[in-house]
Image (cartoon, rainbow, N blue to C red; front, side, top):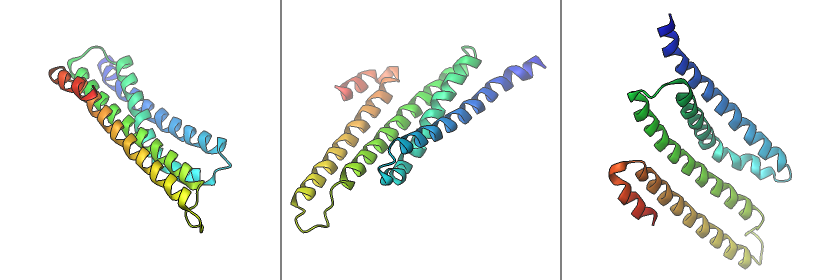
Length: 162
């Protein structure tokens, strides 16, 4: 019976961590929308970040649950490394979603369907360009960070980040 509990306890901790991550993601979204009631467009735009936020918080919870409930087993190191790479990817996805939200909020303030829209069009182009550069930087940083987790290619990851 104790052997069954030793194998079931990490699984229960992982399930609890996923549940907590999903609830936390829901709470964060509700708080952000409530704090910005003046921006009705924010409610629709934050849907872009819902899934990356859920995945990021769940992965953080699963990593913590595995560290707390398992000893240094050989299988845990491989899983922990895979979870770390997935966490880097989901965090990059979340950062890109936040950039999309910021872009949408900035562009919603300036209308291009008026007669004199030269300034709004210029600002729109600048914001879109800044978002694209930001996405490119996030992707490069995420790839470099993921490569730094492998000892054999740390030099390549360092070079990419440099």
